[in-house]
Length: 196
Image 1 (spheres, rainbow, N blue to C red):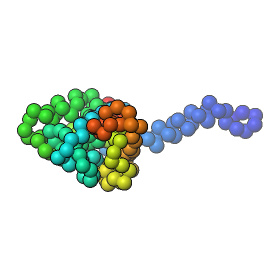
Image 2 (image 1 turned 60 degrees about the horizontal axis):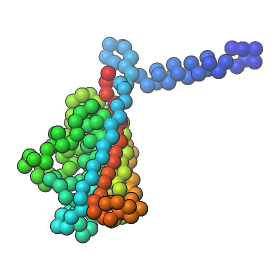
Image 3 (image 1 turned 180 degrees about the vertical axis):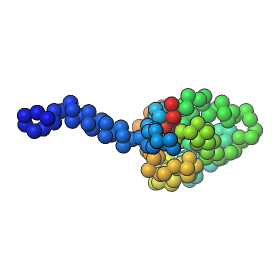
Image 4 (image 1 turned 30 degrees about the vertical axis):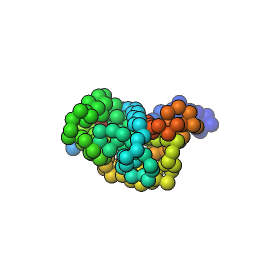
C-alpha cells in the first residue's frame, strides 16, 4: 500500500492476474492444478458452382432455389468451410484429404457427417471446440431467413451449444462469379482448445 491507502497499479494488476489464472485452472485428481491448453485457430474456405438439377444445401439446411451447388457430396460449402477450419486448428490437411471426391463412399453424403468426423478427431486429441464463426457469400438466394436453422444443424453435428456457432451472410455486390450467381462461397474460422 502507498501513503494514500491504495494499492499501486502494478501490484493491483498482478493480484488480478493471479486471481484470473487461479480461476481458469481446475483441480485434477492428485491435487495439482491444470490450466487449459493453448487455443489453436484454423481457417476454412470453400466454393461450389451453382447448377440446375441440384438441391441447394447450406449449413445442413435445404433452401428453395432453382439451382443447387455442384459437388461429390451434398456440396454444402458452409459445412465444408467449417470442417476445414476445424481440421486446420488441429494442423491437419483439408477436407479433401479425409474425404476425397474420387471415393464413391462420399457420393451424395450429407456434410454433417464430415463435421461429426472432425469433432471425433478433436475429441480423440482431448480437445474442445471453443467457438466457430462463418460467413456465406451468395448473391442469391437470401440466406438470413435460414441462419437460425443452420446454426442449430451445425451445433448438433458438432455436439456443441448453439451459442458457440456464428453464421452470417453477405452478397458480393454483383461482382465476380458470385455476383453473377454462378456459385456460392463460404469462409470460416474455428478455435479449438487442445492440451499441450
